[in-house]
Length: 281
Picture (tube, helix red, strand yellow):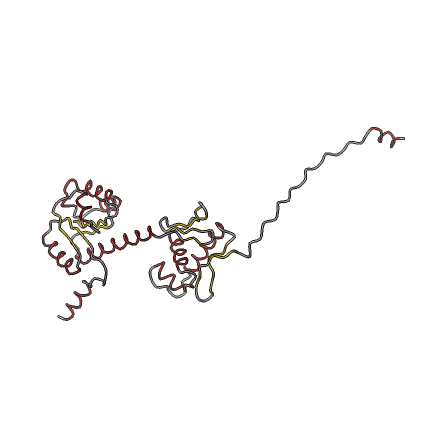
């Protein structure tokens, strides 16, 4: 009995203190599934409502939802049209499709229409809720990223809303991983970040012993920054520890010498007739 309670607590963690409850709608008619799902939603403290039929998008807007779970079987022949309209009209809404067996082509079609995730029934309600929570979390991070002001450092402007860095109007042409790296380093306000911390926060898991990924990506990032902004040094190495981001004018940069322009060759001067005559006498 004790193990069962512990397992239940593990699957149903208490909401984080101070965190706002999510607002979720479930478009489904499976009474057994809805009953089990509803109990877990109540335990989590999420506000939720069940929709037995398609609802106009303006009504969904009025519900002020974080996410909606949709069973395409409930929608009938209009399923794809409704899903496409829902995703296009409400780009800030998390959409999770939870429906019966489907083909790869159908799942790809739904995701390309704008659905954030797709789960096939039968499924465990806890997995569905975890996926809903993950979708909302990703969207909140994206919104927070879009609201962040650009970071200006030396000649470089780091734009979180574009996942890119610029020198003037010219893109530094960073990859997604390179951008995450420069953003992390720049946000540290001159603090030295250890390689292990960088790896954990950019790659998302612990760094294996001997892994040189951080060093490789720092080198690539430096090369691009040097090319785009040659008069500045941005990333400084602390040997045996990690890296620090601090834009400083480079002392190594010397002005290029003025180009040497060769004078055009003059044509040979023909001897004057009088000189030739004198020379002949």
